[in-house]
Amino acid sequence: MELLDLANRTIDTGELTSSINRVTNRLTEVADGLAVVESFSHVWVVSTPEGLVLFDVSSGATGAAVLEAVRAWSGDPVHTIVYTHGHVDHVGGASHWMHDASNRGNARPRVVAHRQVKQRLDRYRRTNGYNLAINARQFAPSRTMALNTEQPSFVPAGTPDPDLEYDDDLEISVGGERFVLHHGRGETDDHTWTEWVDHDTLFVGDFLTWNFPNCGNPQKVLRYPAEWAMNLRRMIATAPQLVAPAHGLPVQRPDRVARVLGTTAEALEGLTGAVIDLLNADATLDDALHTVRVPDELLMLPWLRPFYDEPEFVIHNLWRTYGGWWDGNPAHILPPRQRDLAREVVAMSGGLDKVVAHATGLAASGDLRTAAELIEMAVQSDPSSRTAHAARVEIYAAHRRAATSLMAKGIFEATVRDSAERAGVEVPEMRRAKPGS
Image 1 (tube, rainbow, N blue to C red):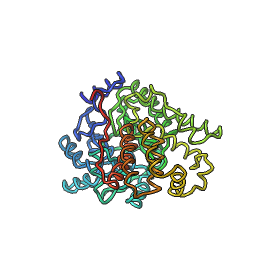
Image 2 (image 1 turned 30 degrees about the vertical axis):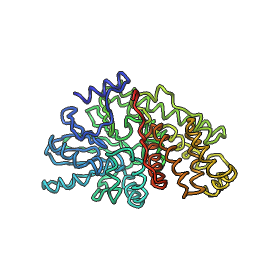
Image 3 (image 1 turned 90 degrees about the vertical axis):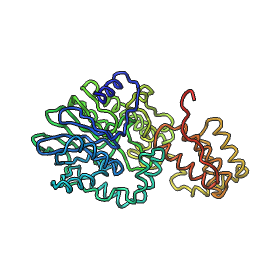
Image 4 (image 1 turned 135 degrees about the vertical axis):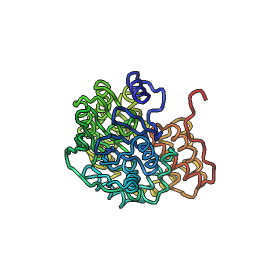
């Protein structure tokens, strides 16, 4: 089977030979009565005599294609939908299944999730404008996800809240098949991972995404690195024959599960321990950001590449969790307004043109971090300056080309587009040149 062969080969060799986070909207039957539609997010489907059980329903933008793929495989009614957590790429396609049940004259599918999923969806609805804005920034490099930025509601209309909620663990039975749902904090506080009893299979949602764990998103609420690692260790202990994630590739056999989930846990445990050690030594966030590292041999693994989130963002999250929002700089307890500080620095430096020139020179030398700080001061000191905005375009375009994580790329690209419009210049090419080009 192509999907499992690709997964096994990638894990065994540690080499990438093709895309592993695929959005094909095609269904693969992985085993008798078990299929997956690779989408954003994946949907895993279990066939039982009483109806289908779906683990997640993908996003509003991909939900219809997922439904079509599943319906080409089975016309059975959907009995139960399990939300692994409340992110919209996992729950946004639910309305398609509700309409499908109605059109077929079937009972409405039951929706099962952790109790905090409803709280998350309520929060998303309350902060709709903010979430639409950050979604547009975060996924600016992705044309697939950009489709979602055009909808008026971050949570797609018709997305149902859970019917059956639980707190710690819950066993459900559908058509004689038993599923044990476990709550575990990780990417979110409302996450579920599920054991399919007697089938040695785990449905793990975003506990595994085939990217470095999404545990430090700079625009989102707290994540839980230590608990994430703990839950991965619990999964390994069950010795599953198959781990079915919501992004990326399935993992087959206990030895591969131990390697993939174990190294992921190791990376998160290392970051957590190092940050706590620095806090105990009364260090600063600056110390943590510039000294704590995940070993390169872990980051080179195909399932730990920092292509979505990245370790530096997780350090911010850990600092906020264990040490609060203060970064250790006493000036930041009662800071000035940024534009006031920027004007003082620009004046002290001899004027806007000198700051812009110095920032541009730093960027040319490869110091993009310092260049970005200085060009922000230039723009804040005079928001109408086309010169400052034009330089900002070039600096952040270079920053975007150098970045690896989608989150950093998205924010940098949004900044480039904003300043290009203000400066009246063309948006430059921002994609990293391929080797040999």
